Image (cartoon, rainbow, N blue to C red; front, side, top):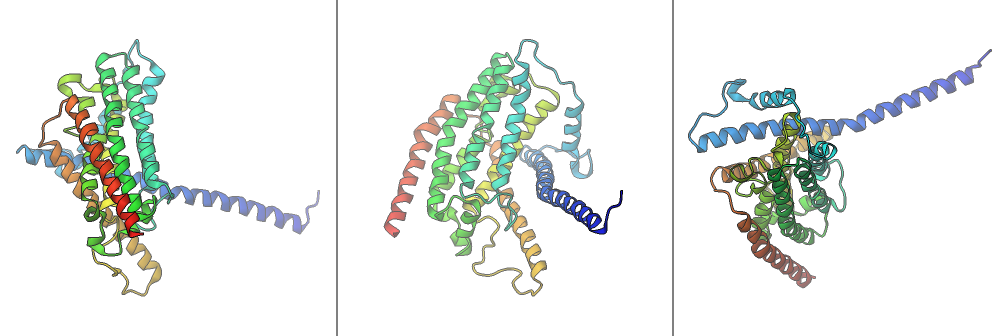
Length: 362
């Protein structure tokens, strides 16, 4: 069988195109892998910071033996949980018991799709970015409720019910605050919201235009993260560990991961919605605008934007960690009263005022 040169060139070009497609597919995955690596590092840093800050507040010694300054303590704890026995409840619903932690983790990881760490470092610039985050974050309590129900334990079931009730109570004020920000920015895209705050630098932040909404969002986000004083679904004195009671090993580690991922997502959204995101506080001035190397300037600006975003987010993290080790836990009736009788009317009034001001400005 004789193959002419044209057929050989056709075969070679086809093989090269297939190879290029595979290479492009791998390149498309690189940003996702980079983001996952960054999220992992951030969670480890947050765990270390919380232990150090709590130790300082309580005047005791924090982690200091696992690695320099105790930096490897979180890795040591994760490794220990990874190799511990995965115990399953004998009379529980095993499929739901196994799926619950996965639903909680995946729903929170999907929230990072619409978080702009620095321009143009965002995986999905959607026109409904902030509302997609709210919709995704409402899925996580479903996993917690499934975990509590499938454990066949009354403490776990009560913890799951508390998680669902708490999420419903504080999701509505949170949504009203986000809707007010969207009205001010004339967009629901997270990138557009950040760019709308860049006109006047520090004084253009939504923090100054929405101070009431900022306080409501701050309290609601802490309740969504189930952080003290809102950790009623996991109250140790009342529910042992809530929906986590029957879990062990890597599944318990996933719930541990969920709490810190939720805190990281909330702090980043506080930065994006109220603190100007990646923008500097100096209006109309680009920090690297004096250079002439266009590609290098783009890389430096993106790196600087990520650094600014994370710096602002760590400010919120410090506040939330300090609150956890300062205020006592609320009762369940106090938590529901705060959500339904105070935060909901205040957030609704703030939305009506924002809508009225926007109509008057037109």
